[in-house]
Image (cartoon, rainbow, N blue to C red; front, side):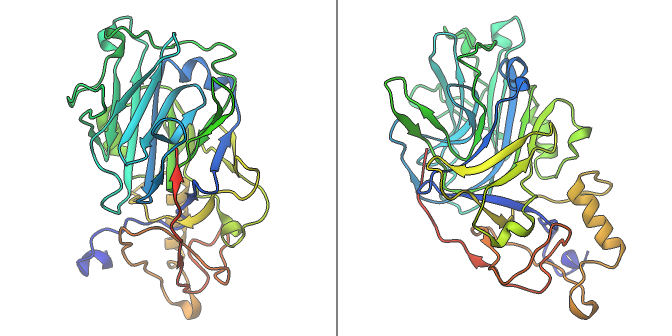
Length: 355
């Protein structure tokens, strides 16, 4: 309320909102091991979502032009962006060909967070109803790739001579999901890395097509996964804890829907993505059951975010600048919604990325 009185608008912030910073130069990646639920239910119909803050320079992949946000080696679902900053969704057909839907909203020029979403409905028996949709900030993208039709309509590749894969084979579905990069073997031998540079938050993977209205209604809110239908994986990346000031050791994050891990690392076996305080525009709503929002309510019930001497801490609105990482002297704890004393986070250094 105070922020509104001061003319600052609602705060796009909740305590313990963290995210992961990825560097293409380091080949950072989160690997989610294979689970049988990644198979049939996650190949014939699906939806992927993520908030991203891309650095303005993305390294071009050695093969192709696409940087991975959330995807699987050699199969769909896949959500990414081109190295020059346009959202992409991809499907793979039964003949091994890729179908690409590329958007036209520039993601690298405005220095802001963007919400990306891709959805596919492959369960209908009618090809015209098998639709691939791509959204940026809740708006359906006008197609702008080399082979795209230039329209702002969902795509129906099964009416264009494609037959999209709807069942898994051991070869097609043997690997798990990857976030922030895609490291896979090429058909001709060797490995290809398609790595993202920037920050990723709120990764959501559904085993159904979610509609545009659902995307818009939920994209700025933390979720209580158990309240959602067919939400398979939910990585809000809010489990930073004491690791915020550490760069050593392996780190595991857990999905808040299906209880399944993601391993932070790199394709080189050294380093890994780093935590940062997130300023993605997510806000707790009244009566929210999301764990982060319940924590915020509990803190408020005992007198707000306490600092020294009983002072109350009101976070200022966060501008759309690159996320920041608290320095090592700024202690954090998983149960502490804000730093124990006012620390000025040091800005992350920009890195180049690839996909």
